[in-house]
Length: 246
Ligand SMILES: [Zn+2]
Ligand SMILES: [Zn+2]
Image 1 (cartoon, rainbow, N blue to C red):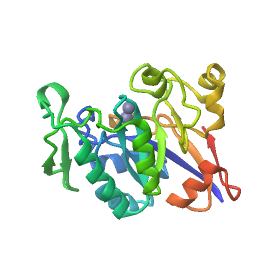
Image 2 (cartoon, protein in one colour; image 1 turned 30 degrees about the horizontal axis):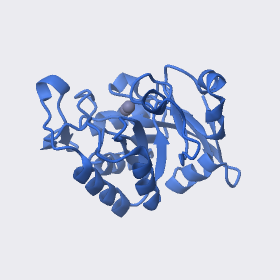
Image 3 (cartoon, protein in one colour; image 1 turned 90 degrees about the vertical axis):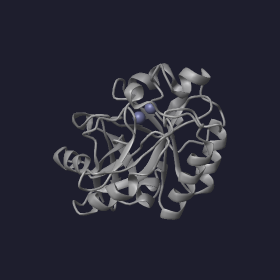
């Protein structure tokens, strides 16, 4: 086994707040430059860039955890990831069904474009992706787990769109696979003020919206190979797998 360096929170050109330089080819080349072995693709309420990025990354021996950053009804951001293509597709349908019918205004919120490997636009999402789904944190968690996915509340230390900022506390029965601490804090620092988080695995990631952000925070996975099941083992501390932070 060995350490694989992972940044599990990266946005693309599909997120309105994602820079137009965050197209699939550029993301992979930045990840390679930064020495990342595993990246998570987590656009706001969409998984539509995951497949292409996964295909391109495989050529560079980088593993892609495919998912999204979901905004729940309470406006809590949560990272979700899926192993199987059919689960990812089912979750995309869930996002499409539960996203409010409010159109994006690109001049205000930014472009939401899907591109191909030649950086040509192939789709533009008409609805504003940063809006909250009409599903609660618990409903999203249960749906993600029904698809055998991973559910990770994002940047829990942030004063906006985090479980603490929106709920004011960490629910006792929260069924999270891990919690994410933003690059502005640290698990040690935030865990000292909120010891209840220490019952969960804690990951740190970049929440990159610009190429230069990629890899600014990362988590080491001590695993046999870069795969979904090994990452799950590491989060659970199973079979000698584990996470460690850089
Ligand atoms: Zn977020
Ligand atoms: Zn994000």
